Length: 161
Image (cartoon, rainbow, N blue to C red; front, side, top):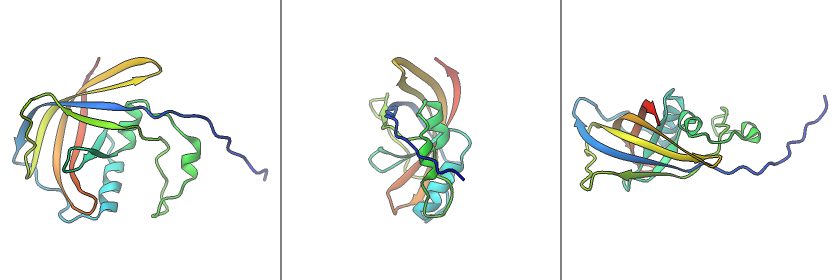
């Protein structure tokens, strides 16, 4: 078998902004996996088929899943599939750019228990072109304090702009 060499290519991550509005408490949603370990939360988010993120207590995005990265056009890096994870599973093949949460309402209040629903506009720039998508969002309080994972956000696109 002929050895293969992976040659590096410059790749720039795509940053995105999630503008949140119309937050409404959803008391029917329960905290997911009380006292879940960080690894369990990370695996569950990556397993989501729809775009999803995890934010912390300061509303900073800590995790984005492959579906989110694909939606905003994060470039694939062939060498990332060579990287092994602790669990021995495959790593995400897309690099992650910075994701910012912004609140359109001057008085944003994410419920501290259970869950919430809201509307979001996700904006990003790719290849010199601005893109955006409007989506409905379901948020759920997480039970993981290990890495300050507070909320899981799941996005269902309504229309592409």
